[in-house]
Amino acid sequence: MGEEGNTSTFNISYTSFFLVGFPGLREWRPLLVLPLTILYVTIISANALVIHTVVAQRSLHQPMYVLIALLLAVNICAATAVMPKMTEGFVHYANPISLHGCLAQMFFIYFTLLLDYNLLLAMALDRYIAICHPLRYTDLMTSRLLGLLAILALTRSLLVAVPLVVLTARARFCQTAVIGHFTCEYIALLSIACGDLTFNNRLGLAMRLVTVTLDLVLLGTSYTRIIYDAFRISSGGARAKALHTCGSHLLVILTIYLSGLSTSIVFRVAKTVSQDVQNLLSAIYLLLPGALNPVIYGVRTREIWQHVEKMFCRKELVQEVGEKPKSLQNVRVEQKLPG
View (tube, helix red, strand yellow):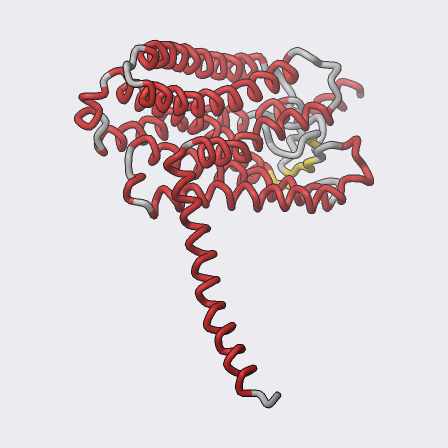
């Protein structure tokens, strides 16, 4: 009887799940709905503002600014893949989601994360050509090359994200229908799967190691050469501008890779860490780049910041001009009134 019971349990494969993120918060969960909504609106607004600035200003129609706009557009997509469902989960303790919905969310999470990595590589190539081969920059960094880099970034992201989703879809989920996470991450789904998952675990780990290791080697090599050549620039102003631009890119790289590395280590090594801590690290990993990137690029990139300032100053000027006729009209009315 025991063996038959185990067999029947193993043959069950759940097709609907409940996402339970931050289970330790319990009654405090509804209080986080408003802050999360504000954070989501802020991420969308800040990224959209910088994207609008790049699109609207013809002087910013250059490869570096186009790549920044693409990166921020990916941030909006990444936040949209996570935050609406995450916020819904704080309204209800158990947030229902179907297997297909879970796999779709997982695909968009990893697809956008990989696009982030690939766009950072494209930015490194752009800065390498601009600083190490400045005289050939306009000849090399053409719109055609930019389009090719975008296609390569999309293809490489698909080649990693699709196998992970397909492999996860083939697993059997018989342990429980409750996922102790606010989103459908690969490791969270595998934690409730049954059967031999050795291949799944090894493939997931291998893909992450190969992708991250290769990217870090390429980024490290590129920026080492870039910084070396930047210090050799004779003009102090040009040298400072080159180092300042590279500093912005390096800040974004550190934010994305360090948060991702800490999450991977905790999930795979620290088995005693609570689910709330794991959820917190995942939230930082998934949402921090979208919150910080528009600040880093919008404030630290002087050309973008100048246009943002002009945009707001122009609006204030228009409001003042619109208010002046009203004030003059009020003065005239007052003059006509009997004393």
